[in-house]
Length: 213
Image (tube, rainbow, N blue to C red):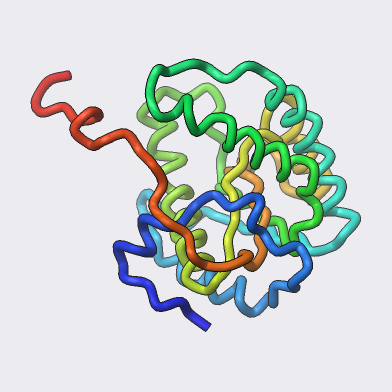
């Protein structure tokens, strides 16, 4: 059943969810396809729609994907976070704690999802890279919004892509590595409660430039 959220509430309360993922409640495939149908209305460059979406609910494959993720995430999460001198420093402890929790429990999510896009942006300039990822990421965000509107959640993770991780995931899932790039690894579950709030963010005035940097 859809949540009663205004457009602004949906946009400002869709979070990367980690500790509040419900690992015990199954997620129906039909519901995921409903969310994907919505996501596929997002724009793509030249209307190419070169995306492919892999959903994984097999326990053994989920565990293998989680192990690939952990091989990169565990070391990364042990690094000292950068100090920025603003509210982000205050949030870092909670973010690290929740990221570590997800790292330890990744395969427990009922479903994992990897969005893929035809072609590879390896070695291209900034313009081509922006054009490439701009043909996938709006659809992924629309998918996350659709999940939130139905009481589900996810977290946008990319650490499995580091080093040889993307190739390992491609081999595991049969993704043609030379022809498709992966845009992330998303645990999907119902959320424990739906009362998410706005996050603390830097004020827009601090991040805005008019006519010149």
